[in-house]
Length: 240
Ligand SMILES: [Zn+2]
Image (tube, protein in one colour):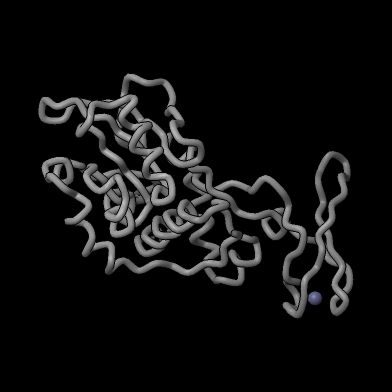
């Protein structure tokens, strides 16, 4: 159970850092990690992508691609395909739709786990990249909490967006982006906390540990660099 939960958190971070935030259905079952993806789905992190895959590997012979189609029968969608080797076959929705992670949904779950009050919804500040989760006082200092992904390429926009809603130096940026890469950007002097280091799936719940240790350090990025370099990254087939 614990191993699957840890793998699921690692996979979530990888998906959030992939450009399309999704993985082909083939990669789910070929990678032998269907149960890990399923764990993320159970927690509401994963849904289906915006469009059905145009082609998938034949699940029977695995020799070539089949091209899924669908019919609506008595109000239910039935997926099917034809393989030159195996003939006609029916497929499930999980076999023909990409599995997708919604970063705005992740931001909402982080906000809830942090028990942040004062804002009814998370606010998207940089499209698809940065969300303001809310504010909270920590040791008599008001801090603004943010969640971001794929920050390296838009670091200047992220810095400016945080400055528009939080006092300089009060920002707490939780992210799936790798700290060593952020050290080379204009976010180098911000309080950046890797999601992977603080979040977990435990006893059926998404939880975040105390941030005290991170908020009492001056430069979290340099201190977390070594830890991140040792982190095992799971390799999955992603859509780019
Ligand atoms: Zn086949």
